[in-house]
Image (cartoon, rainbow, N blue to C red; front, side, top):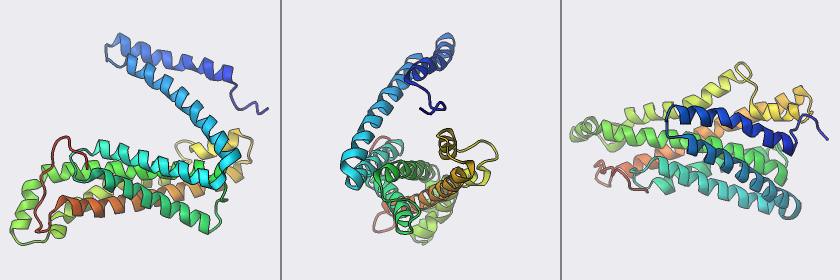
Length: 260
């Protein structure tokens, strides 16, 4: 038994860490005490369920099961992104496509080059990290793009009135949005190991893996996260830009609560 891994009794005892957060929320009347308690309970139940499902996938379904899990992750990530960017035309298909492209291309390269093994117990956790990175970048881009289209509508329509095509009229806002969406991934790559030990490396070290071996894996993780974020953001930007304008280069109206 690996003594670095908490027992189930230790996991139960760690619930005590949530109590101060609930107490502060209740004492300050933040109306968050119930949300914190529910979130903590859901996290435990969801992770236990995921662990049981992964055990079945690893033992019985192999790579086909891994592909199904990754597809479900992409669909879920697309729905989360679309929910955050409500009001953007065709938000759901745009978000799902962007996450799928960023995740699929990155994982495809890793598998094609032999960087990771084509095994379910490798593909699922690595794929989960890739999908998560793609989802974060896509969400940031779509939310910022929607807000830019709303607040800068007069300036965009003024450029359109001067005869600029939609791509050129929206280009300054698109560049700013892309930069904002990629800053978290770039900063995380730049400061890795300087501020804190990353999750993959920490997990491997706790599992007893040699630190130099853990570092190799973490380097791959950082590169793949940067790749997934960049590809997803670029795909989302291209598709969202086309969705924002009609065939005659008019900026479409952005509704408050419509999902794409």
